[in-house]
Figure 1: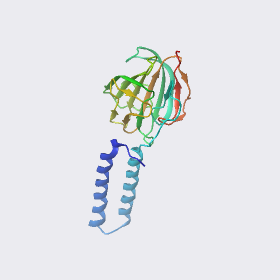
Figure 2: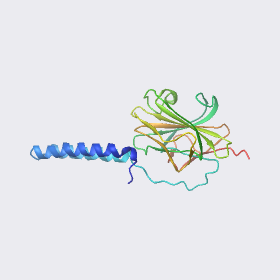
Figure 3: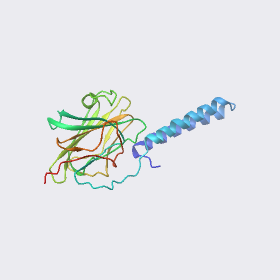
Figure 4: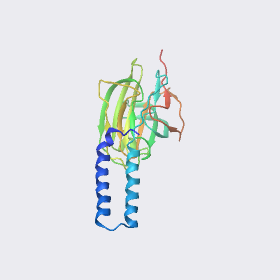
Length: 223
């Protein structure tokens, strides 16, 4: 299983710490049942970290024309018309994906298009599934414009109650493609996607989606 590069240093550090801890216990004390318990707990914790930082190699094989693809693994927790106050300053369709600590936490670009905006906001660390987390939590905003210039899509990475770091790879002026990683969020978190009114929504509440695989919406063709 491939590990995301964001987790390599963390995994190496924890492996050394746990190896030294368990080695010291077995070397300094007579072998007993408690040492095996510590060893088992260490193994479970380490495998949990490996699972969190896993990074499956995915390619989107569908038709990308007008497609909006899920940027993250997780569950749909919001589908609604809202006022987007940071960039568009008008009404948009919002689709929110909540990622639990057990989901893959790599994020992909939702569309093929030029990156117009990248902006990080400091904030709080409320539970990511709460509506106010979109505007009050630590977050990063990326705006893309479709290749034909007909639509703009805003994606917001949102930290959760456990998350303490958002990484965003998108760069203003560069093209972002569906198969490319947009960023990574550590521990429980959320991704919001703001779409033009009239966009066809292809998912429903509580549906499980897969990053870079599930088409969550289709933009209205202006041709």
